[in-house]
Length: 424
Image 1 (cartoon, helix red, strand yellow):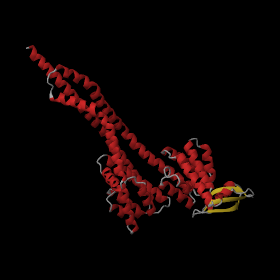
Image 2 (image 1 turned 90 degrees about the vertical axis):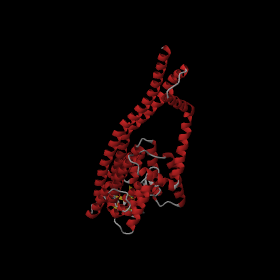
Image 3 (image 1 turned 135 degrees about the vertical axis):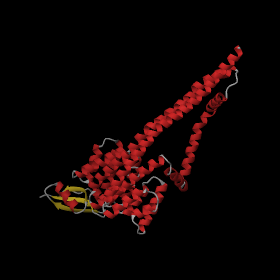
């Protein structure tokens, strides 16, 4: 039987090498995986191993770091769909029995998108230089989140990288679906708002000046509503150009304010407690928190590490601060349900279901059930908001147009009355 030489990573993430005897290459991969290692390269004995797979020297480490930096500048970032495609393809190839080295080489040739090709090439080179996949992914923080990298690291340590990549695919698909549903539901109201503002501006800048010019030419006294309309039009024409610099100044002030830790905390607290937008944001966070926590726990990530990751990816300073306090309580010996209940961040239903999951020993399954519950609640809230906004926008537009029409008709009626008086 042929003998195969392999290079792999053990449960501690260190490079190991050796040889196995079996009938074919797939059998060699299976034997290496049974030893609790992730195969990187497998060759028939007698073929010299690739020198680049040895432990890299400092010079090689510097060269690898420089290559990673250049690759990051080239790749920059990936969309959610591209990241999902890369993860899915890599999971399929590893599940089919390929080594990580072979799978990345195949993706480098197969993927047509330039950024995906550059990413696959960079990860492949890092792997050849002796680094693990999770270590290479840390060079691309704008592509791979801490959650993603830590799950890959857990998969390498446990020897179940294909399984964890499949779970990552499902997780990414769920998060993308959640975002898409919110965006699609709010798209129509946003279009209505923009169309309404455009209609009002067009009416005020095109039609009103023609009518008010005629009324001024008559020399008759104008009603208060008409004078107010004329003043509004003149103010819009004279000072309308200030809207752009004013908007830029407000945006710059917002960025400057939120770049300070105290300002960021105050703004995120305000956004969290808003009536409509805040409610949607809260339900979306509850669903994403539960889904992510369940995914992390079922992949062997410890509770404290999972809470630390959730704090990093929360995207809200107020939520991150509360999650940090809950993590400190867990370190002191409290259960997660008790720690979260003390922060007044989650509703009672969420905390109660979390406690049931802790007591039943089916924590991950319970977290996925909680995520399903709050995703349904999120859909209801988005549906309510998307149903209320269109009539509210129409009422505002109708009121604005009605005021303009009233101002014009008041002047017309006043002019008609004066003509009648003159005739008599």
